[in-house]
Image (cartoon, rainbow over all chains, first blue to last red; front, side, top):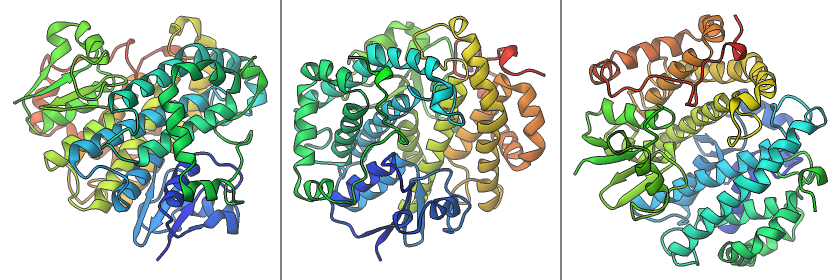
Length: 236
Length: 236
């Protein structure tokens, strides 16, 4: 039985962290809302999938198990597909890293929606400029140099267990998103994070992922998603 | 060997979700910064504990294992102390719920710091009023009625596995924090979430927790923490 994934069909968003795993392991999956439209996500949130009703997408269905929350989905898939350490401490460390990436993703999102998700970006541009300035000068360097130091302490090649894992995939994808949204800032920070940069290059060169990234299944980043390129939030 | 916990000693914050678990199971733990002061947390973040350097507190040390991120710590403790379902799907559902609570906690925090963590509240009061209004009228009811419906679907007594778990503890504590920070809003919402309210009452009546909550080990909520009572953010 293939997996079913439910996520907004018009943006990569948090669903893309799940797709990266599914594509990397070569899993068969039905990206339901890409076929059926946004109504499939709405119905999933209303409880149409059975199991535990999800708060928000992405949602993964594996037989009877319905699971939401990106890090929970990633831990579940990582355990089933050998993309996590086998020991409890190693899995715990992996989850810790997934959650630090999730915090970075949330703060990247909040640069364009500091006053809340229910208002348009255009109605909060001035607050967004302030929040983005703080993100570029303070939070983003703190997150990236932290991840760089953790990766180097782990030997430089992989985040956990001396092997490729869902953590490497998440880190590679958040870097791709940040490079899209904050190209000038990322160019300035690149010399400080060579191990992260090299990791991201190795990840996207993995055969299954290289094929996926070149396929129409990969949605491009855009200004409806988490990582948005607004020039006023990333001055040259 | 007792656990060691590192968290800011002057506020309950995210550390309190970990303390609630440790106290409930009667674990022996050293709340290091309560004895040694804030420097213990600073040194932990600099890597003084060995193991994987934490991004931010809370940090739990169990022998060789050093783990940060509230949900990762809670999953680790829950597995060791029988406060999680034994099956993979049940644990996955539990993690999903922990992360939804973490999202609610983050949004509660952002009501008073919408423009970023590095500025004082007093320098972002106007933006905070806007963000808090959105939280009170939209996000908070959405989160609470969601959790209420999930709890009822699970039978009304417990969130996962038909038994007390770290999820019940997290939900009870976030409700306590929200009641502190948004007393007027919570009073208005209470009739819509009777199962959550009853759960929170059962949790704080558990003997170990009742003793803990009456002890000096329990830090009161205050305006340095996540849940802050600012009257202008919760009008009558």
